[in-house]
Amino acid sequence: MQIGPYQLANKLILAPMAGVSDRPFRELCRQHGAALTVSEMVPSNPALRLHKKTLLKTDHSGDTGLRAVQILGTDPGQMAEAAKINVERGAQIIDINMGCPAKKVCSVAAGSALLLDEALVKRILDAVVDAVEVPVTLKIRTGWDIFNRNAVEIGKIAENAGVSALTVHGRTRACKFNGQAEYETIKKVKQSVGIPVIANGDIDTPEKAAFVLHSTGADGLMIGRAAQGNPWLFSQINYFLDHGKNLEKPTVADIQSTMLSHLEQLYGFYGNASGVRIARKHIGWYFKQLGTVHPSIQDKINQAQVPSQQLALINSAFNLLTIDHAA
Image (cartoon, rainbow, N blue to C red):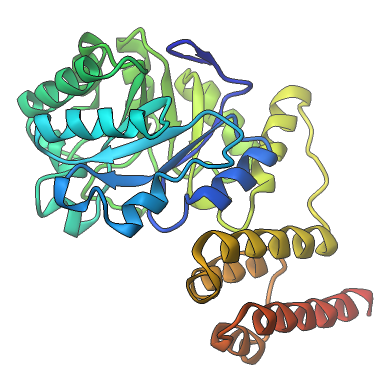
């Protein structure tokens, strides 16, 4: 798949996820086969540009792949300026968020709320594309609700504005993450535009990935929640698409090694105190790959305050799991 001048190695992209798609997780997913990873959404609000959290989200030091940054906002001028600033900071692709369903985002008419105002969508896209030399991509939902599915119209606006690729999540804003994603609208978008279309939503197995590609005709796939605690999903999907059969699932030792390496990266990136706190959700996701972990053990891990304590408790949990698996 081609995005502007960039030829991606495969069809798989890590979705921008708030609080998840930080530099350590993006790097981990690249190592396991994601051709492109997109940063957490960065606000275009000038008052937040130098905020510590914003600067961390746009920290590309040590990145080994294409640097794609997603920006969020409603003002065309601010969005254009945010795009330029992020390119100056190292972004090679600018992605625009018009898909986030979160209440705090939509309440200020950003994210998927923009789908209600096609004229504003056009002004934002025109402003951002004109502001930077790098490719601009767009992420949307199928519409505001099931009675207002306008992804095809938005796709045409995007193509006419010079957007290089379009990601469509197969739900409306009203659906949030409930129910099942639908792919018919994504198929209609793909049939209506000439730019690459990337399908997103409920792609959680290699078989599902192949089905979505076949049923929509999409050029690529964006994977979000299914990669949490499961970065191996990218290599599994790539292998299935190339060979038509499944890779072996990661062993307990594989999961332990990957988790510990990931946590060390989190401690280094955020500092020990914040790293331990941020690691807790990732630990829970990793343990889901192994089935049940006794709640008392999980509680002790979540109460750890320093890296050495957190790591020791995790290793103890894996020792118990190894004994259980061997029994």
